Image (tube, rainbow, N blue to C red; front, top):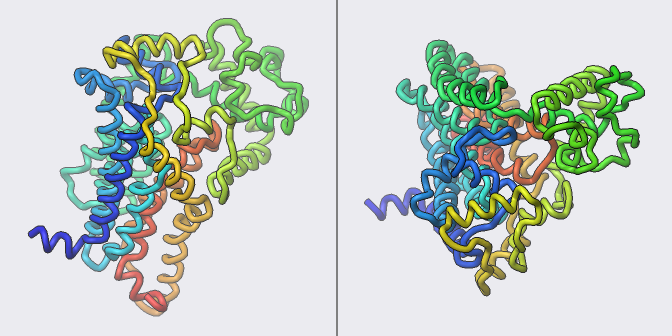
Length: 467
């Protein structure tokens, strides 16, 4: 049995083994974890369960489940296991979807799993105490199940996607994508079941949020983030805002303004200078009105700004963005990070010590850390390669259509369409609603790779010259 498994899946098992070794290296070189500014907010929510105005509580619930272990090393270990499981899901989905003739070749399925298993930045993200690794796993699991034909999985898909949304709200459009996939295949009732299964936990969380803040929604910062997004182009001279919105204007020309997110966190931001905390209902609604006016007045400027942010995804290099501090969190550090400097993070650090039941921080252990830094300097998925991966399915589909022009076209939508659509949504949504961030790209990568592998099914390759 074992020999047959190795013979059939040997290349993938080799990649999986290397990915496991790299994650063990991260555990050995950076103990117990790497910290991010958001980490402390998540930890506070563990001890004071309540919806956060900026981030949903899904990742805090994940931390709560692991709290009895009192070990951030255990948290990162589980996150590394989720990263490995995501790679396995990609491979299995590519090999198991549909009829044998529509499955991806083994080499394509193996290549599809390589970025999530071997990309150094993916491994670093798993070692950070942030929500993205959990979010990626939930999304890939939901999408993978969505491509099967088993009716019993429909409710599970809805629950997985709801959990993803409650981990990172950027996942909301994916519920529509998966429901639309079932409708496209003529499965109206399963689409309804999926929506119902997703809505139950989301409505329950929304009720909790409303009971806490008397506000409708899952978070209370959507208007603020969209306002910050529009400040890359908003021209108040053209917008002619009413007096109550003029207080949010920045007189500097767009080319001299800071990155978008500074308008949420910087002390001199017009929104931050408003009375009360940044995310009060009044401030968020004011910011949302300003953003709506900016977008409707300058729709072409908004579109150009979104495309500019999205374009950063496909750059060959890795330029520092949005600033050196945030960029640095995505690199394995050379020196041990110091204690948090901002007051809210200092409060969160005290709760982190309570979670760990001991001192917190990051101990850098050589030579393991040095080996990992050297690996990170060379092993990543360049932006143009990701763009090429995204282009593979439509290019192969067009080629296949030309070959079938004289024959009978295949019925139904291609299997690659749902992971491809989900990947595009995950790339476009942050660029449209917030701004580009390197860690926002990584959850889309396994879906893009899965779509590319499925587009290279043996059935399609037989119809493409040289296939």
